[in-house]
Image 1 (tube, rainbow, N blue to C red):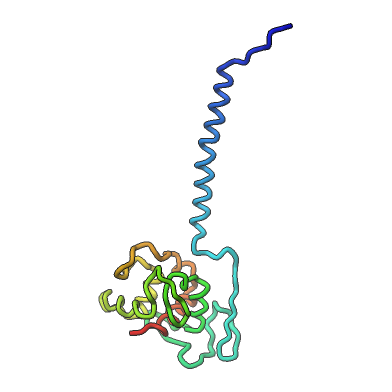
Image 2: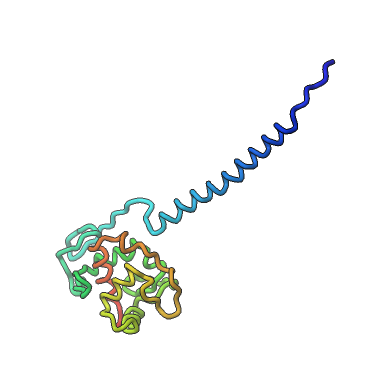
Length: 182
């Protein structure tokens, strides 16, 4: 009976090293791909959702400013444009603001960010007496420009200025302004 042929020990070692190199590179590359995909989608909805708001009998999409107003539902802001507070309530809800902020008009009880019932007025005064509407808008667009006492930089997402249209932004400012206590 012929002797079994022995494998070259260097080829077995080479194969093992190639597999180890492959696995060593595969996991970090997979993790990096997951991390980039996961963190670039933060703050963006996974699907397009259209919310319809009925204001004073007329139905409009949440992203448009309704011409029909009731009582104090329309507020002109001093930050360069008017906003519709009723439409702003929808923007507040769809942007996830309620998960971090307490705000009575929205029924929100979040504790991660400042209380929007009272903090904007006092923080605007503390920030060089900035007009309240301008302070609220700046806090949404550039949340790290002023950090409220007791909170840390980087808590609020910084992409709302690009994620929201100027109409949605003005509506959101009007909504927060309408419920903030001076």
